[in-house]
Image (cartoon, rainbow, N blue to C red; front, side, top):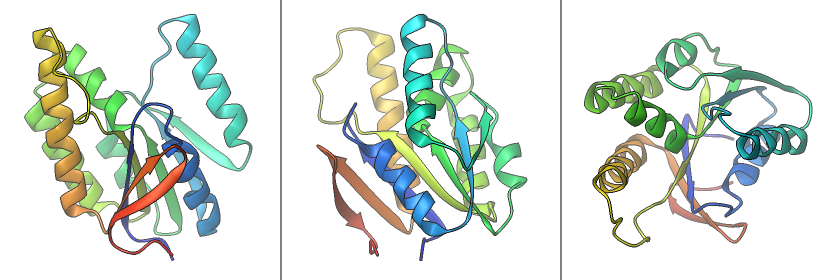
Amino acid sequence: MLPHLTLILGGAASGKSTFAETLATDSGHNRIYIATAQSHDDEMRAKIARHQHLRGTGWTTIEEPLELPTHLAALAATDVVLLDCATMWLTNHLLAESDLETAQSLFLNALANCPAHVIVVSNEVGSSVVPENALARRFREAQGRLNQAIAAQSDLVVTVIAGLPLTLKGTLL
Protein backbone atom coordinates (compact mmCIF):
# COMPACT_ATOMS: atom_id res chain seq x y z
CA MET A 1 0.00 0.00 0.00
CA LEU A 2 1.39 3.35 -1.05
CA PRO A 3 1.40 6.15 1.56
CA HIS A 4 -0.12 9.55 0.87
CA LEU A 5 3.21 11.31 0.30
CA THR A 6 6.49 9.70 -0.72
CA LEU A 7 9.78 11.50 -1.37
CA ILE A 8 12.42 9.78 -3.51
CA LEU A 9 15.85 11.39 -3.26
CA GLY A 10 19.07 10.65 -5.10
CA GLY A 11 21.89 12.07 -7.11
CA ALA A 12 21.87 12.55 -10.85
CA ALA A 13 21.38 9.25 -12.74
CA SER A 14 20.99 7.34 -9.44
CA GLY A 15 17.88 5.43 -10.57
CA LYS A 16 15.46 7.51 -8.51
CA SER A 17 12.98 8.12 -11.34
CA THR A 18 12.91 4.45 -12.33
CA PHE A 19 12.34 3.45 -8.72
CA ALA A 20 9.54 6.02 -8.36
CA GLU A 21 7.90 4.81 -11.59
CA THR A 22 7.96 1.25 -10.27
CA LEU A 23 6.27 2.35 -7.03
CA ALA A 24 3.56 4.14 -8.99
CA THR A 25 3.00 1.24 -11.39
CA ASP A 26 2.90 -1.34 -8.59
CA SER A 27 0.30 0.72 -6.70
CA GLY A 28 -2.43 -0.26 -9.16
CA HIS A 29 -3.81 3.28 -9.12
CA ASN A 30 -4.51 5.48 -12.14
CA ARG A 31 -1.05 6.90 -13.01
CA ILE A 32 -0.44 10.60 -13.56
CA TYR A 33 3.01 11.93 -14.42
CA ILE A 34 3.73 15.61 -13.80
CA ALA A 35 6.86 16.59 -15.72
CA THR A 36 8.55 19.80 -14.60
CA ALA A 37 11.48 19.79 -17.03
CA GLN A 38 11.58 22.14 -19.96
CA SER A 39 13.26 21.21 -23.23
CA HIS A 40 15.43 24.18 -24.09
CA ASP A 41 18.02 22.22 -26.07
CA ASP A 42 18.56 18.99 -28.01
CA GLU A 43 20.18 17.20 -25.08
CA MET A 44 17.20 17.88 -22.80
CA ARG A 45 14.72 16.93 -25.54
CA ALA A 46 16.55 13.61 -25.93
CA LYS A 47 16.54 13.02 -22.16
CA ILE A 48 12.79 13.71 -21.96
CA ALA A 49 12.10 11.41 -24.93
CA ARG A 50 14.20 8.67 -23.31
CA HIS A 51 12.28 9.01 -20.03
CA GLN A 52 8.96 8.85 -21.89
CA HIS A 53 10.03 5.75 -23.82
CA LEU A 54 11.30 3.95 -20.71
CA ARG A 55 8.16 4.88 -18.75
CA GLY A 56 5.97 3.25 -21.39
CA THR A 57 2.22 3.50 -21.78
CA GLY A 58 -0.47 3.76 -19.15
CA TRP A 59 0.44 7.22 -17.91
CA THR A 60 -1.38 10.54 -18.26
CA THR A 61 1.32 13.17 -18.61
CA ILE A 62 0.99 16.78 -17.50
CA GLU A 63 3.84 19.08 -18.47
CA GLU A 64 4.00 21.86 -15.90
CA PRO A 65 7.22 23.70 -15.11
CA LEU A 66 5.84 26.08 -12.45
CA GLU A 67 2.19 25.90 -11.38
CA LEU A 68 1.87 22.60 -9.52
CA PRO A 69 -0.82 23.41 -6.91
CA THR A 70 -3.69 23.62 -9.42
CA HIS A 71 -2.82 20.25 -10.94
CA LEU A 72 -2.37 18.55 -7.56
CA ALA A 73 -5.77 19.81 -6.38
CA ALA A 74 -7.49 18.39 -9.48
CA LEU A 75 -6.44 14.78 -8.82
CA ALA A 76 -8.61 12.03 -7.33
CA ALA A 77 -8.04 9.65 -4.43
CA THR A 78 -7.83 6.82 -6.97
CA ASP A 79 -4.80 8.45 -8.64
CA VAL A 80 -1.11 8.17 -7.98
CA VAL A 81 0.89 11.13 -9.20
CA LEU A 82 4.59 11.01 -9.89
CA LEU A 83 6.06 14.50 -9.81
CA ASP A 84 9.42 14.40 -11.57
CA CYS A 85 11.07 16.44 -10.37
CA ALA A 86 11.11 18.99 -7.56
CA THR A 87 14.65 19.99 -8.53
CA MET A 88 13.63 21.12 -12.01
CA TRP A 89 10.54 22.84 -10.56
CA LEU A 90 12.75 24.78 -8.15
CA THR A 91 15.23 25.61 -10.92
CA ASN A 92 12.39 26.92 -13.10
CA HIS A 93 11.21 29.20 -10.29
CA LEU A 94 14.75 30.35 -9.52
CA LEU A 95 15.40 31.26 -13.16
CA ALA A 96 11.99 32.97 -13.41
CA GLU A 97 13.00 35.03 -10.36
CA SER A 98 9.89 33.88 -8.49
CA ASP A 99 9.40 34.44 -4.79
CA LEU A 100 10.79 31.04 -3.75
CA GLU A 101 9.38 31.18 -0.22
CA THR A 102 5.84 31.76 -1.50
CA ALA A 103 6.14 29.18 -4.28
CA GLN A 104 7.44 26.58 -1.83
CA SER A 105 4.71 27.32 0.70
CA LEU A 106 1.99 26.94 -1.94
CA PHE A 107 3.59 23.72 -3.20
CA LEU A 108 3.87 22.18 0.28
CA ASN A 109 0.27 23.10 1.04
CA ALA A 110 -0.86 21.53 -2.25
CA LEU A 111 1.04 18.34 -1.40
CA ALA A 112 -0.62 18.16 2.01
CA ASN A 113 -4.09 18.67 0.54
CA CYS A 114 -3.77 16.57 -2.62
CA PRO A 115 -6.35 13.76 -2.58
CA ALA A 116 -4.09 11.45 -4.63
CA HIS A 117 -1.08 9.44 -3.55
CA VAL A 118 1.93 11.60 -4.42
CA ILE A 119 5.47 10.50 -5.21
CA VAL A 120 7.94 13.38 -5.46
CA VAL A 121 11.36 12.84 -7.05
CA SER A 122 14.10 15.26 -6.05
CA ASN A 123 17.87 15.53 -6.29
CA GLU A 124 19.97 15.36 -3.16
CA VAL A 125 22.55 18.11 -3.60
CA GLY A 126 23.96 18.27 -0.08
CA SER A 127 26.81 15.83 -0.76
CA SER A 128 28.40 17.92 -3.47
CA VAL A 129 31.09 20.59 -3.30
CA VAL A 130 30.35 24.20 -2.41
CA PRO A 131 29.46 25.90 -5.71
CA GLU A 132 31.73 28.67 -6.97
CA ASN A 133 29.01 31.17 -7.89
CA ALA A 134 26.21 32.90 -6.01
CA LEU A 135 23.33 31.53 -8.15
CA ALA A 136 24.51 27.94 -7.71
CA ARG A 137 24.94 28.45 -3.93
CA ARG A 138 21.46 29.99 -3.72
CA PHE A 139 20.06 26.99 -5.62
CA ARG A 140 21.86 24.47 -3.38
CA GLU A 141 20.52 26.13 -0.23
CA ALA A 142 16.98 26.39 -1.62
CA GLN A 143 17.05 22.74 -2.77
CA GLY A 144 18.21 21.60 0.65
CA ARG A 145 15.42 23.54 2.38
CA LEU A 146 12.83 22.22 -0.08
CA ASN A 147 13.94 18.60 0.36
CA GLN A 148 13.88 18.95 4.14
CA ALA A 149 10.38 20.46 4.06
CA ILE A 150 8.99 17.74 1.77
CA ALA A 151 10.68 15.03 3.86
CA ALA A 152 9.18 16.45 7.06
CA GLN A 153 5.64 16.03 5.77
CA SER A 154 6.26 12.76 3.89
CA ASP A 155 5.11 9.39 5.16
CA LEU A 156 7.90 7.62 3.26
CA VAL A 157 11.34 8.93 2.30
CA VAL A 158 13.69 6.78 0.23
CA THR A 159 17.11 7.58 -1.15
CA VAL A 160 18.32 5.74 -4.23
CA ILE A 161 22.02 5.16 -4.78
CA ALA A 162 23.25 3.14 -7.78
CA GLY A 163 19.68 1.95 -8.36
CA LEU A 164 19.35 0.62 -4.81
CA PRO A 165 16.69 2.06 -2.48
CA LEU A 166 17.44 2.87 1.14
CA THR A 167 14.50 3.80 3.35
CA LEU A 168 15.14 6.86 5.50
CA LYS A 169 11.62 7.33 6.92
CA GLY A 170 8.54 5.09 7.00
CA THR A 171 8.19 1.57 5.72
CA LEU A 172 8.75 0.46 2.15
CA LEU A 173 6.36 -2.41 1.49
